[in-house]
Image (cartoon, rainbow, N blue to C red; front, side, top):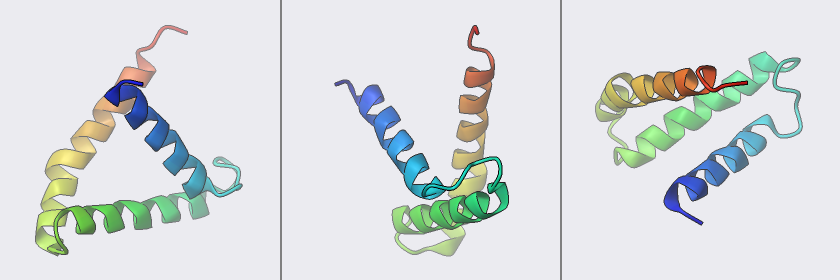
Length: 78
């Protein structure tokens, strides 16, 4: 399994854990709260507990990369 495949598997496993049996559309509000908590926790851990660095990483790294991945998905042939 290549690194990209491993990363995709980790992302899918994380999404399943975040949804935790909840329907992602019907329980959107609670699923997204859990996602917010997860993102904040991972960013704080990755930045060694430095909240200012975590916010910079969110704004300058995470959000642009998430937008890019969503657009790649949107542009896939169906």
